Image (tube, rainbow over all chains, first blue to last red):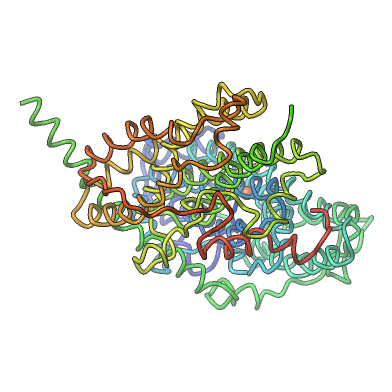
Length: 333
Length: 262
Ligand SMILES: [Fe+2]
Ligand SMILES: [Fe+2]
């Protein structure tokens, strides 16, 4: 997982000023125009760098915070096989966090700095993880829908103009498609199970569907900042186009499960060649983004606590390394 | 091959130990001191779960009553479990009283002591006349060596890190050491299993285990606790207070929705 479209008003640095000029900038522009990758050693406009640091670090934070809602079911998975699959899945998300922090570090910002921003509440992560996982079906719904939406978001990022981010996304996308399939399999077992299991699956779908659609971010018409990201080749496909693609792909999957998507306005539009769907509750979306979702405080507090409780471990590891260094130094002398 | 109840119990002991410790590892995922350790503990947990599944599947097949890994893991109560008590202790509170539900010193030290034991165990079981058990041991040996290496590295870093980390590691070691007695204590079925060439007597694993444990403790500047008369009894189905809570989570869905397929 998991990007949510990051062009959220109030988070974007000002559009790049006309300050950076000259040959370096021309070369950068030419590189972007020719669709060649920008690498860490290349000159880049400060605003491009800042935009990437923000997006990649928010993405990394989302992977790490995203371990928590599914982690809530690690000890309660229904079979040993499902438990092992879920452990591997949540572990993968931690691995995605690692690649992404490493990609952000190529832009000259340390993981510690980024974690401080997360823990102080300054940095955002995908709001989808501020919803609770109250039943086992939520683990199916997250894999199927949340990882599914993440794939839609991330496939275009494999072509992102910044090389390290694009390469991280290629690795990540491969694993996300496993996650999506495994989530769908959980839903399939529930949908073909007892009436209680089927109710569990429908209830999860009812709760996750709209937050997942909102994950793609504000409508293109309300998203004044994505223009610059598009021009820079960071963002390749618009929020609304990605959302439509997701809906079109998901409707038949829900039909196959025999579950009902909670949208009375959902309908095939032959003229457009797409599904029409009902309006998204943006007030609810912004409420969660701005900190008042069901689990915002708990998720962040859990991360802060894990970090604080681990401080002595990190300090001791550094002290030990320093002792070893001194010992090696003395032996050499 | 003939299946004696000792043989079955022995497989339940090993399978249950991997299962229960694997469950404890799962509790760490998302809460580690650094992201790399979330991933490492998940790796250890996944290996242990894999061992548990193979061992319980094998036990069920030997028993011949149609019980699979999930029937043995999910549908038995506390006295039916035969795991070593060491593996079921919680990761932190209330056994390790550091004011946290997860104590990395306690977890790492337990992993170290148990992985060192499993390394010896798999070595011996590689020659078992129970061919399936020998194959499981061969596969698991590599995993346990990795677990041992990971934990031993941290024993050194944290034992010989800061004063605070040293104190925490020594406290964890002092708490855990008495539970290692159970790993090497004799029991009524051992002679039969040894005679049949299925499993070694527990006591024979102790010398190798000490050889793997003591030098690391010394290098980590940790004092090896003295042995006492304390003897835990999980492998006979008489457990600590903690296993029941672990099972209430592990088994929750199977108990709440009897007979459902997942
Ligand atoms: Fe991910
Ligand atoms: Fe994922």
